[in-house]
Image (cartoon, rainbow, N blue to C red; front, side):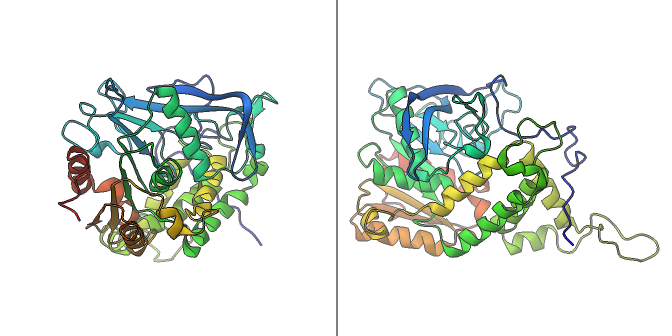
Length: 406
């Protein structure tokens, strides 16, 4: 007998019923986002065979583009990220997903650089994705939205660069899926960037990474409220929340390391035993409460259809596809590069970044390498900004001088 998991309750974060989707929809406040209509009433052919006739990119900027447009830095976000790298003092909430990298004297300094971050194609925070309105039907794309790849994302970012008058990025920076985008930038448009900074990423998804991803996607697809991907007209509380929450929980287990779980949670209980001393299935360990909280946080701000497509794009990531293999593709990278790994990362383990470093060096590319010392696992590229920011700031300030990290 199968048991359908209960959707996350509203009590964990206390903000009322969960919207059917956490996607930004037309008519919602834009906040600090801007919208660029980079494809209008013409075919935009995707790598996997799909076609879109309109593409809008949601993006945010910080700082000012200088006269020769030479100070632009593109920040690429990871799977469940968006364009909101950092907040502004007049915003509530003001924080962004990489706030610790942002500010005067830090890696992303708006007094020095014109910083751009765009929500990726297939995303759910303003850029064209499954929750967007299909101009052919006047309804959300839903199940009809095609599969996208990292290369498709980068092509839309190149169109955004054209829109902004940026012929060449001073740097393209990203971790995890963001690092995949930076790598594709360096291969697809080697003369449109001056340097590359990547962290916790890979040249091609491994079998184990694909396996983890498949289980998460399967959780969404098996949720009865997924409705084949066409759920946007349903009322709050009836979206595919259980499936998306489980997908997030699965991912969260391998985003962090065993040592962090052991130190933070051990075998503590969030639901204590009752006086009778009997055990119940619904009694949770502290780590289970943490995973429930993480699942609900995501369903309130993300979209299940977008999760499926972006997660699949990460599985499809392979620099060598159609290019004669990874080694041949890496030989196209001609810009100084900074590669970072995380010692405790079991999701994108250090050997994958070592390989990138070695392939870049073998190709004659100037490359620096740094291993982030952290127990936080894959998420350390987000949490360990005190280590990462000075390194990246020095790399950018020194005209991509790699002497201190070679």
